[in-house]
Image (cartoon, rainbow over all chains, first blue to last red; front, top):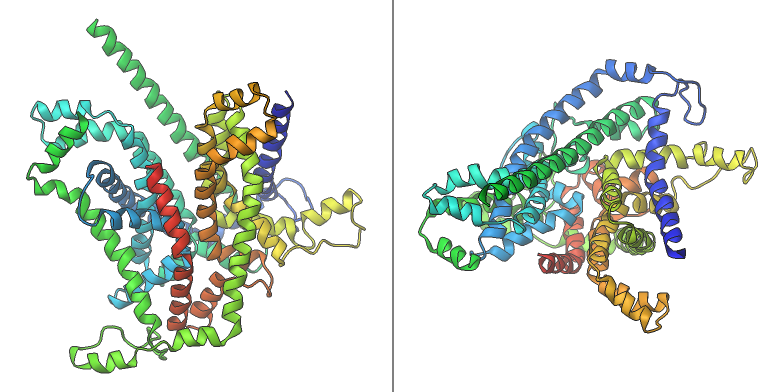
Length: 272
Length: 305
């Protein structure tokens, strides 16, 4: 099996390429020396300085609030958009609608950021906390729509139809039947929206205002001045946070899936 | 059966149902589509020393005639007159084409290896590809600064292995090479995932049949595997090519003063020179350049759906 050895080599090299820089960054956040290339022993001092850096902590708090609010709004709108795409096969302007869902996924951020800013200025809206939230909601809802859409496509509609046939009103059917069934995808979409918001520098830079400096903007302004272990520390915390979130969501979805399969088995056994 | 009930449901006069479509539709029209009309309008106006730094777009009704006569293609003419802009556009395209090619070169074998891995391993491998994608873009680019800078870890590694004299330093940081490394590193998951989903669906019996009939593996690859994975190749290439063309963070943090990319130029015009109309014109031209790739991407997505 020559090809399987080749495959293993390719995978090892590629994953090393993907992970070594992140691992180095994490390791050096615990470095006692301020120099990147000199290992001065294990230390938590950069976490302490980071913690007492008020500007950085303020930015982290702003980012967390922006992330939660825009991810929640984006998930609500994105789920509606996914439902429209899958359940409404024909409506006027459907082409334009699906175009507006896919375009933000690839649109260069400088264009999205600048054009949205010009809208806010034209509407005379002061830039700040809420303009960043609107901007983030707009691009994250498209990612949520894609994630939820793929779940809806493989969705068995017979349960929904049964509820409707038995006289359950459509809104209630959605909350009692549809939403619980697509919930793993909705949660995954929320997570994705939250991390995208947490991550965004360019769109936030265009649309932010006084008092709404997000963490990426803060990190970027410090990174331009050079590599500091303090930035490594905050990056490590962000990485840890996101990794735990992603793994927890995937375990959660897997468990939900297993429960569903078990319930189905129980139900089948009950009927025979 | 499903389609019958669907059309029945769609025919039921229930205006509330349409809220599902109308709410996200209006949101995207207002916050995604309308801004493009505004950016086009402002690209036609003149710079003014004011806040906002351009002449107003929505004047009173009496002034509409004056207003229209003031709109002109001055900013676009300026873009053609100064060779800097043309060079920046061309250089962005060159960097995007080369990086997309490099991404295919690295991403394809990786996706293929993932698709050929035992099916019990595949979810873990996909997870491992996605995880860096969830990690901040900015952090991943930042990680490379510490590695590539002249007194960074790469120099240290090469010095300790004896490939470099102790007093020598590697000069990659702030060059185009660093930009390519940064782009390939950041966009690799975007390339691998569409390739993998195309390769994973492949029917292996086709390859078995080819080998039974005496076709050598490399020929079977070019005759069967590659053509069947083309939708993935196109999707992955477009997902990478379009945003790379307008990339700002990577050329700004890893590139040098001579690394010209249009995203960086736009950023400087906007934040540095505060020339909003010119920045808008730069954005409009970039958008026009990307219309064809975006159309290909959308088409591809529709086929997948």
